[in-house]
Each structure stands twice: as C-alpha cells, then as structure tokens.
Image (cartoon, rainbow, N blue to C red; front, side, top):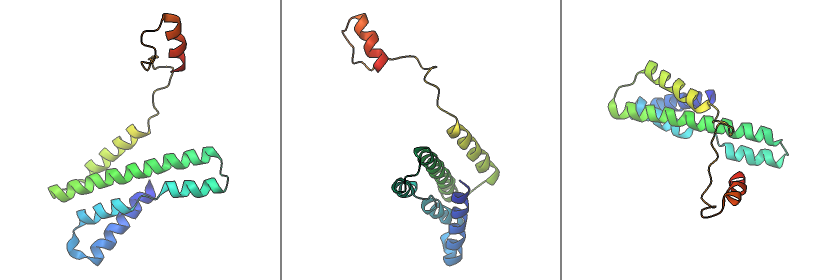
Length: 135
C-alpha cells in the first residue's frame, strides 16, 4: 500500500517536471494508473519456486489492497481534475474509511442462514435437508 502511494507521487512529480502544463491532478491520475504492481506475475513466479500456498494467499491479498489503494487515489485525482479542488484531509479520511471497511473480515459461515440454491424445488423434506446441507 505504501509503495503504491509513493510510486504515484513519484510519477506525478516526474510528469509535472517533464510536462509542466500537464497539471498536478492529471499527473496524479497517470501515477495512480501505472503505480500498482502486478501481483499475478509475481504469484506465477512464486508458484514455479514452490512457495507455500499461504504465502501466495498473502501475496494475493496484498495485491488486492494495492489495487484498491490505486483505485482510491485514481478516484480522488479524477475528482480533483474535474472539480479543480482537492482537500488532502478529506481525502485522507475517506481513504482510511475505505481501507478500514475493505479490510474487515467477511461474516462467518456460522452467522449465515442456510439457503438452498434452488436445486431442490419440488423435493420432499428429507431430500431438501440432504441437498441443502451440500449447497
């Protein structure tokens, strides 16, 4: 997540330095587009070396967080480019809220009510119970 933010800022600064008329908001849009690393490529390389599945799962999760970070930065940069106004405190607070909501674990399977997928329509109750337990 931190590397995505730093990469976005570096790209924006370089774009603004190389093309001064480009504008900061547009430079940040470009930075947000090119900043997230390719976790799929890294995962493919790690699979070749026999890295444990748990590490691959962590890598996938980090890739999703990096992509989400870039999307949030992109959203704020496009908003700033369109509106012409940007508030770092508001954007920072919104970013913290998005990351907090995105990082919450999904509800556990115990709290979910069992629902049939519809495959048992017209069956007797014993058949529905056995099918529902496998759905």
